[in-house]
Image (cartoon, rainbow, N blue to C red; front, side):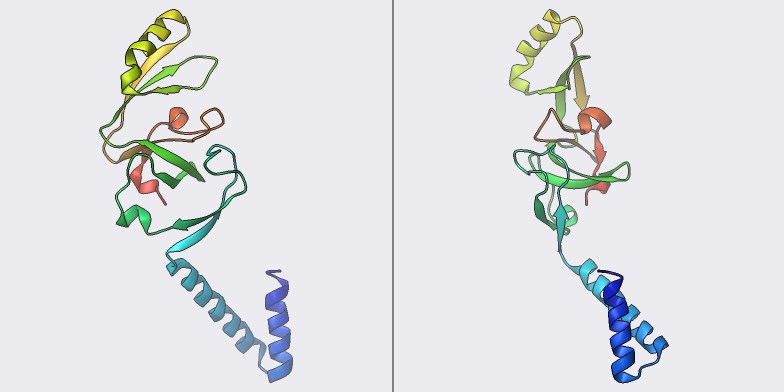
Length: 171
């Protein structure tokens, strides 16, 4: 569609108005740049979700309206769902810890890390004592960083795997 449409416009404009090919090409290029500029200035973008790491909150294949003004205009809070760039890819995850927050996790060789709420610290320590391969980790989120996790913890590639993200990577 993207190739056929400009060619069709070119042929029609050249045939109807006897416009020179240079003029037609210049007009099409200017129109394309103007449309791109208008798109970039829009505060909302459509985002197609690929992956099941945020299920059941956001299903694979969902189409979302994303407010591109959000990261700079409204302060982020724990519980917010954000889009960010990491390693050249875009991700959608939930913020579970802000700068200065402390998290405890149980890690085992056979399972993903499990986040432990503060009120369950004692049972977590007991669990680690009873399992040889389990270890308790303490994570403190540094300034300018966020700790993000997918709602579908089993299927999510998130801060438990790659660590905290920089707030500047939030889109």
